[in-house]
Length: 294
Image 1 (cartoon, rainbow, N blue to C red):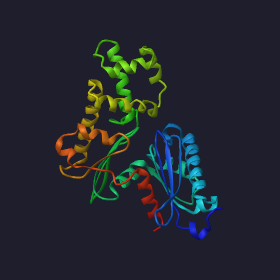
Image 2: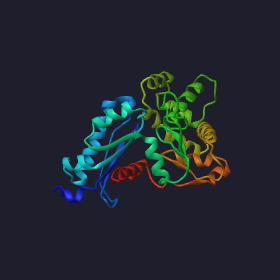
Image 3: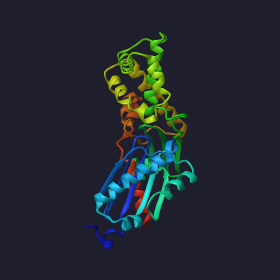
Image 4: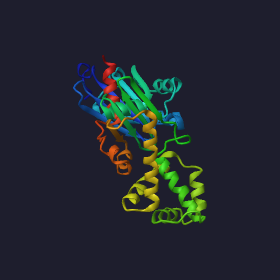
């Protein structure tokens, strides 16, 4: 049985979407999660209609899980943070396709920072399939990166996977020396660099990103190629923090699926400043959705 309207009038909905997948959480007025849903990629830059379809699938899963009617769902306050929403036109396109009367759609940078810092000051490096950095102070929040795979996403899962394949081809050609990781990677393409070429010409960021766990594991095991890639990613994080004006001792949150793995490769003074994320981008979306009720 669906919940009565007096139970649902203060419902809030958080939505988090990126190149790998999307998540939806429905919470009651007390902040308790009463419904959840998951679906495929929801970055409108890559395919807006596919992103909408996946978002709608996740929203419907969450609605059923929460036992809400579609009327109740429409009246909820919803906040969506999606990778690739870099302008009002894209935000409106997504908003128009979702079943909410009270909805705000922004880039996932906003929800990631809000969730990781729980609205407090500090710097954040949310690194998953893509990447960006942000620094929040009393004067506001400054963002860096988030330009997508073709122009940026340094240190991200997609970037790591792509760099590994580049390195593997260089090894095949004798420019660089093979390591266990590059040999394993080459074997995964039947030992033929031409298969790597074919893959790279059609792969999505999420597909490149699937190679990242092997790099993280390889670096932990001392593989030279993997360690070099992780260190290159960490060096980018340091340069980006400097550009943001990061001051030694400020809280630093390495979030996302890959972010925490870079801690080992940072200088001691940065490692000492690392804090655990207070919450996820989805948590940030829920916090911001609650603000829409005020």
